[in-house]
Length: 146
Image: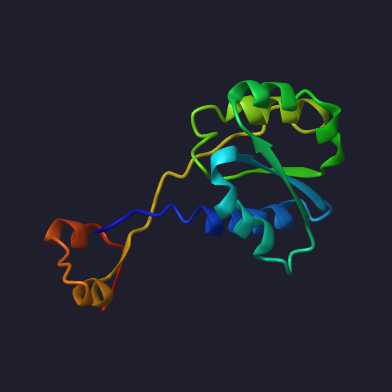
């Protein structure tokens, strides 16, 4: 058996660190997340607590809920926002970013997706589990842990 992890909580924590660097005066951060991903979100809200940020979850169940939510005055209480890496918002990033940019942020703020992913393989652990990486996969790895 094998699986795939997006390490969304680690990416979200890193995004909070970057947010802190580019917006040092932002303190209250709204964290948008899809309703189905609450457990990984808890890690995002708790990890990196050394960051002086008040992280508040903003749960979205449906895209209709999202459209209504981004028009409410409630969001005016936040200094910045993080859209959690959970797959829910991937197809519709502009439905979150565009309305939030209108009141007080640049309307031309770009939404970027990663263009490069680095693959690291742990050959020792895989070997202990009886897994042998094919040569093509090994050739794609940026780092191979022996």
